[in-house]
Length: 259
Length: 189
Image 1 (cartoon, chains in turn green, brown):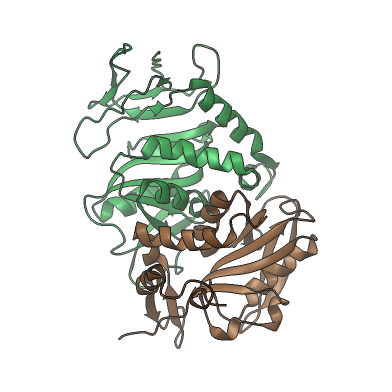
Image 2 (cartoon, rainbow over the protein chains, first blue to last red):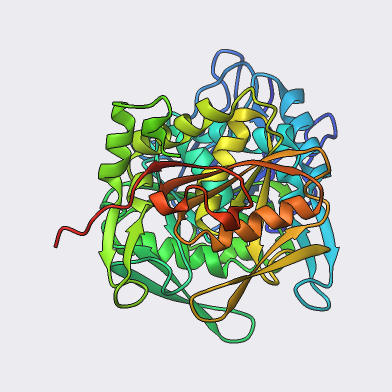
């Protein structure tokens, strides 16, 4: 039973005491309590301008700490079997295919379609998110078109939440709200149905990958405009050099793999 | 074939699924009564019923692939694939899939569109179900079937939440059956 805490403004390779790579996680303003076998590591959020990079987990069935009822503060990845999490992440990571110069020269594309061909890896991916979010009063899983549609609904189904698609312009019929966001060159628009999400609902935003954070930032703004509480963004892969975490309006980000 | 005529007569889940569909008139253009399935997902129970019905039909049948047509097929297909132990294969618009793909063009009312699949997603000997939210003319699904069969895999059935009776026995589906849960809803203005 252990807890690790790193405070850092960069994203070093994240390893636990056995030297194995673990999931990474970040949030603003975390205070760490030390753990014991009877009181597993718990983390509560405090107001702070600093960003902390934290990783690690507790074993032995510790409970997720919630600072306030019905509101998720800081979560830690929980597992009663540390090796099980490592093995699953290792397998998931091994299924992702890297394709150079797509969609254009110089870009290294992280292709998750090969993950979807490995039933166990795909199941493990969903399980890792579900283990994190089940029982945490999440009402909405919002998925970004189109690869967010692949991961979002299975997570929503397993945790009993709604699934809300966030789409390119003119795809959703009926009344929508729109949010513009920056691309490398120019802008794009993301839309959400009016009435899909109610004020006060707790929401996750799901996509396969976070790069610059532009898309996720727009998703957060859409949800907040209708009064939802965005609890966390969840992605399979992060490209940390592109600093997407900084564009999430201080919302926490949870990823399985940092590439 | 419709679910109601194939073992699910009187199944209350079909009624709930039908009730959840929202009809949006004149979208994307005048004259089209768009069958919006997104309300299915805002009711977790109804979404679960939808997935359960397909899973009950396809589990333990040796289905090794669930192929989903972009983008609404992506909302249903993966949950079904996960539950029955199959691969999920996304069938995408042109230029979206990286790496080596095969392409199939199909007719629209005006012009053509294109569906693509990775060359290594599916293998000879795979048994596949193709999933989309709705079948109308069958153009998209016929392209999907062709892609999968070009690799030498077998399309066992197409599965759609909403379908029209005219879709049954559609020649362009190459003899492959289509299983539909409900018919399109009328607009109550």
